[in-house]
Each structure stands twice: as C-alpha cells, then as structure tokens.
Length: 325
Image 1 (tube, rainbow, N blue to C red):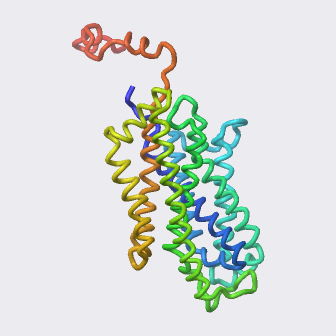
Image 2 (spheres, helix red, strand yellow; image 1 turned 90 degrees about the horizontal axis):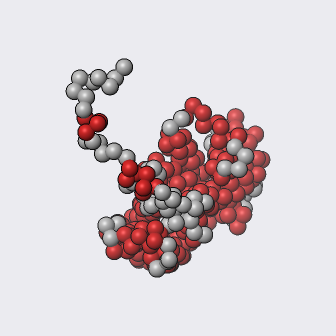
Image 3 (cartoon, rainbow, N blue to C red; image 1 turned 60 degrees about the vertical axis):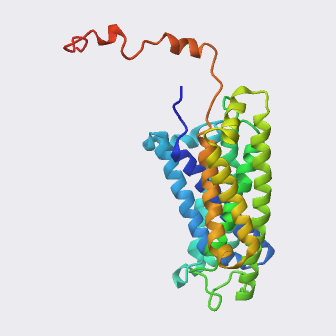
C-alpha cells in the first residue's frame, strides 16, 4: 500500500490557492491602512486571480470527473463545498476589482465599487488560506495531517508567499501614480509605494521566522508523538529519505536563505529572496501532500495478504485466453 492517492495536482492546488489568498489579503490590508493604496496591488491581484483559477483547474482535473464538478456546490456538509464557494466569491469580486483598475474609460463606472469588491475578495482570500490547511487537517485517518498546527502552518506560509509575490509585482501596469483614477480621491505617490514595498519585505521577514518556528515545532513534536503513523512520517522528514528535501530545500533554501537575503538588502532581497520564498512554499505543499500515510482499517493487512499474487498458477493457467468470453 505505497500508492499516493493525494498527488501533485493537489499540491499545486493548495499552493496556488494559498498564494492567491495571501495576495488578496495583503491588498485589502494595505488599502485599509493606507486608503487608496490597494490600487498599487492591481497587478498582484491579477496574478492572484490567475493562481486561483489555475488551482481550481488542477483540483477539478484531479477529481477525475470535470463534467460533474458542479455537484461540489450541492453537498450539505463536505468541507470542500465551502472551499469552492470561497474560491468562487474571491474570483468574481477580485476580477471586478481588477477590471475597475484598467485605464479604460468604459470601465470607469466600476471605480466606486472597488472598495466593496476588494473587501469581499480579500476576506474570502484570507479564508481560502486557512481552508487549504483545514482541508487536510479534517482527514482523521492521516495522523500527520490531522492536527490544528497544519492550518496555522499553511496560513503563515500563504501569507509569506503572498507578501513575496506582491513585492515582486507591486506597482506594475495598470497602476500609474501620475494618472491613476483613485477610488479614494487620492494619488498614491511613488514614495508611498516604496514604503509599502519595504513594509512587505519586513513583513515577510517576520512571517519567515514564524513559519520556521511553526514548521520545526510541527515536525519535531509529531516525531515524538505516540501515533506510529505520524511518527514514521516525521522521522522520514528529519532523518530519513525526505530529510534532504526538508532540511536543504525547505528549511535552508526556502526559509533561512531568504531571511538572510532580506536582512542584507539590495538586489538580492528584491529579486532572489521572494523567488526562494515562493519555491519553498511550493515545496512545503508537495512534502505535506506526499506524506499521506494513513492509519489502516481493521483487517486491511489480512485482506491484502489473502489476495493472489500476480503470477499465481490459476491466473497464468490460460494459454490462449480461454478465460475471455
């Protein structure tokens, strides 16, 4: 039973969903703190919409029946229903917000709606970040996932990756501080843009530190837990075959190195550190999703032991396909 039923499309969906939600959350927070500054996030919001859309595609693709995906909205209690609703609301209102930022006169009627659209998109984006961790934590058979720490870890990681991508795309088209039609009646200056840019780097440094702390506590505590399944997964991460990816890829390259680059400043902090943060966030989802060991149901081992081997005599007795009708 070494087959992974949770595969790479799910990992990409969780990463893109958290990333998109993080971007929308930062756009809303900065628009509240500095009225009118949300428009600087026009390009990051567009990237967030692309991430959420691609994430939905990978999720529907992984379900195997894309033609009946609408059934997810009809389920009464499934947690995936709420994820679908939150994603839909974030996509719809985020798209309306972004269209209102385009420098075209025929969309000017949407400018008064920017505030409410960004608020709804940002709130749903924040809930999507939490949902990506809750989705896995709700699966009780997977002891490595079924812990309140996983939603916290995924949320902090989503905020970190969202901050990194916002810093990379901040102030790009369609935003132009000289001509932008600001919904708040203010022109956001280039100086304010630089302050927001520096604030995003500082916030990301704090988030990286928190993520590192939560990640290490999460893995090391599960390694010493009484649950054999969770302990086996955590041991593989700390000292087993997954250890190089965990320590080298996730901890060092995805967290410690970006933190050092942010601290040093310069071009490395502007270009390299955010890319490493994004790569580390993606790697984290892959590591968690492929750590899908589950508790076996009673009698499962006995059932599989009784199954015939593929080269059993009665399976290979037919020479001319006599068993076919």
